Image 1 (cartoon, one colour):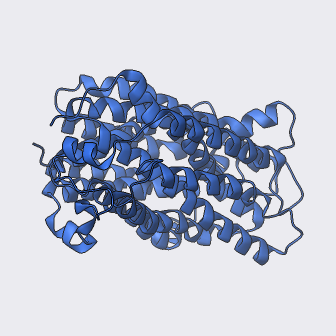
Image 2: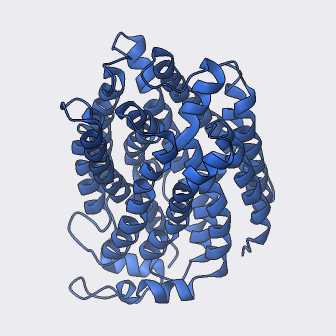
Image 3: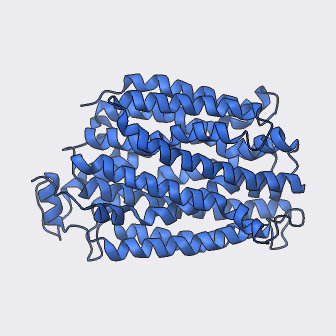
Length: 437
């Protein structure tokens, strides 16, 4: 039986909690390098700190996907994992930015920060994955692109808020400088407020969304119904078997993802220092100029997210979805390569708008291609959890290679933006290999 059409507000409610999760993710993305550099991390080892986010993602998301495929409770199938992950994230968000405030030495502070980052990544991934699976579970093929577009909009809106928080809190008077090795109050309070918004958004989604029971789910997804007490037929496939049987589109999109997410990892790792060096002429985290550059980088991230929202309205106008995907990635690659050549902080807006074009496509199109290809396969949660590996593995590889590549480009972190641009352009070329129905 075909899944029913859902009203706009039902589609909205399915993804609204993603707004809060994305605030947390944006705060992490924009501030982790800044926090660890403030704590005393060396730039050549900085990329190693970024191994934890994708590593936790590749471990947690397939587990959440597989377990939630087999979970049926009165609270729902995916929602229990969403709520538990969000609650953990809130607790850790209050700890991480305080890594330098407990009187520990540099090494101890870095280790504490790493442990907190690992917990934060685990909880964010646990909270994030159910939103994608809820759309896969409950939205029909005609509305799926619309549903993921709403999710993309909420994702970008949450990103804008999270990215602007340090700049905003500095503007209203919180200190943006602190003793050496201590994270400024503007960043600490950004995490506090982000945590509060996260839990409120998740509570809204939990209160508004009612998942189907096992019989309804089986009926709408073309799976033989089983009793609530028995194991779900979807839960019986192991990951190796699922990967062997995955449609070709799963792997073709994964190839594109490899280059895209490697590029994004290098932006998150090195862009604060790249912007600070290019515009302010320093990479010394103890200086006020560096912390100003950190705030301005958050503004640039917000501009990227807003550009992504605008570009997301342009993407449906392309008659050829693959062409839209390829053009978006090409524009993003050009944007990355321009960052070292924009010595004025306002001129930096141009490359970040171009990166926003790529980000819009990366948020919506891969999951649209893959979920359409998986129609009738079953194991939707497990497959989307495994597909997350195409986001996480590239970042792990890029993080392991980051210090070596930084040496190869003269130890100038702004040159890593050119490396990221080349990677994204290669990803654009690889879109050609995707086969669609």
